[in-house]
Amino acid sequence: MDTRMLGERRVVFEPNYENAVEVKDLHKSFRLPTERSWGLKQAIFNRIRGIKGYKDQKVLRGLNFQIKKGEFVGIVGRNGSGKSTLLKILAGIYYPSKGEILINGNLVPFIELGVGFNPDLTGRENVYLNGALLGFSNKEMDAMYDDIWDFAELKEFQDQKLKNYSSGMQVRLAFSIAIRAKGDILVLDEVLAVGDAAFQQKCNEYFATLKENGQTIILVTHSMDSVKKFCTRAIMIEGGKIVHDGDPAEVSEKYLELFKQK
Amino acid sequence: MIIPNIFYRKNRILLKELTKTDFKLRYQGSVLGYLWALLRPLMMFAILYVVFAKLLRFGSDIPHYPVYLLTGTTLWSFFTECTGQGIQAMLARGELIRKISFPKYIVVASTTFTALINLAINLVVVVVFALINGVTPSLSWLLVPVFVLELYLLALGISFLFGAINVKFRDVASIWDVLIQALFYAVPIIYPIAMVANESQLAAKIILLNPIAQIIQDVRYNLITTETVTTWNFFSNPIAMAVPIAIVVAVIVLGAIYFRRKSKFFAEEV
Image (cartoon, rainbow over all chains, first blue to last red; front, side, top):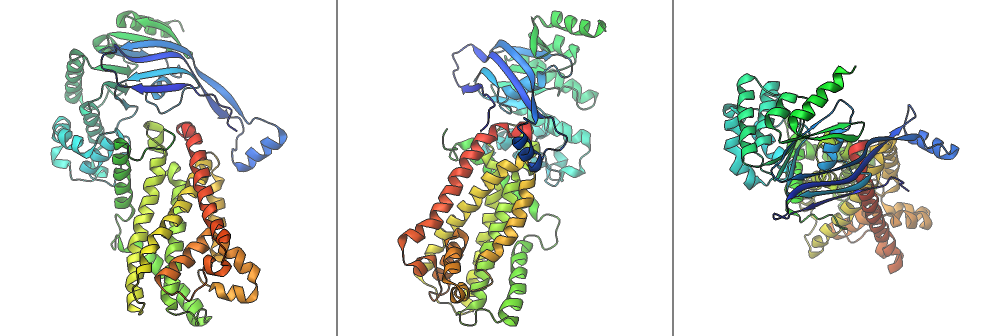
């Protein structure tokens, strides 16, 4: 009935094992509709005429890498190279088409800040909802709660509805939840550039502490400054394949060369 | 992993939090707030009562006919609310599905739970009406939750099945909207089933094999009056009683399997 192939993503909890993430021969293709209208009528019509009605778009073509515990890995590449798809597969949002993924520990993904934020709920209610979506219980959220508001510096607004927050305030709250969330592996998609200069400074300090404490972090970014400043290793993806993997400074150079060639 | 694990702590927390949010948001910003959840079915009942019981004189031979009618409309309101919102649930929560990984059935479960809470409150109103109307409380009332559960499972199965198809083919929600209009008249809510039986035994038999009709009649029988037709006493044949139950089981099993298989691609398609 459904001819799409599936790879495997497994989550284990083995504190003594040195790798946090293992990716073996990872492929991902998306099924994109070729027709302009895609309703039930079109689907039945296609079936009768024997037309597929879609084409398979290959986004990732055989990735292999391992991430050790405590590594701060930057994933770079130009738009459309497949980095966000990789992140979504690591986070378990997309299923791999082929290959194997092993996640060792509790992975907390931030593909976007403030997932599930609802403008009609108060700041407090949103924090608990967001926490539940990230897999934290009310009790665990109680423990983090004050910390989150202190870091966001928005405590006096906690019982206001979110729609009365400025967009900058919303992002700060979301980011504060993100960095207070304690997971074994943090996955971040371009979230470093939020807030004003003072907030930026705070975030940078926080990342530096995380790095010192040996937190495993996977970061997708276009900022080579962040890569050089925080990452212990960088991976560059081009056309769905890994083209460079290694020292952040070297990979940053290669990334910048990519744009000089044109 | 074969059966989605509702007892897994993370899933339970998320289910609770989403249901709470759904419930909170639905009536926010309205003056009467939660009362609307009660007023809507009561308004529907009032209209049907005036038209069918007063003007067309339906059900004059059924004891406690107003409550009898209210029971039917309440259960029907639940069924339409539950399936309508259950089918749309994946699209309504598309933002979440694209951004975070969690078992997708939680979205359908939280939406249908909200409808179930509404039903519970509406049933309290039905019981109050029944007592005012002079229905004597009896032990058979305790059987009502069993039939409510049967109705919920049917609605849940339909939500799983059509909700999963609806992610890709958005026509399904519209088709269901039309279908449910027709279904309303195929179920003895406004007309007494005895009226059909007088005209045609066969038609009455076919109607009573529909699980919704079976459930509504069984609830009326156990809650209000034993002087009513049920699938059980009309056929007096255990095999006939098994038909509506088999339909419910088939729908929930098929729905759950199909949903589970398709849910792996929801994040890409929604």
